[in-house]
Length: 64
Image (tube, rainbow, N blue to C red):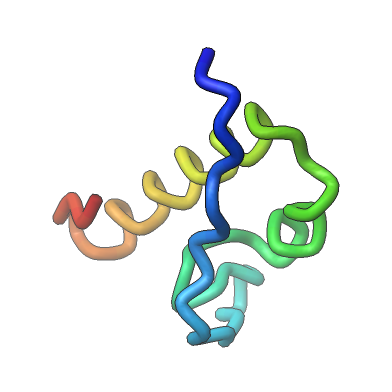
């Protein structure tokens, strides 16, 4: 797998909803907290989950 370090998806809209999901990057509060400690594969897994949440919350519109 590609070992290039993924960049943080943070877009500086740091507001958590009732489910602790960020309105800007769609990561959970836990994923945001753990980000710096994750290896490249762990970060890619978080990005996949965040993108799935974004699609789900936007009514299935794929943004990435």
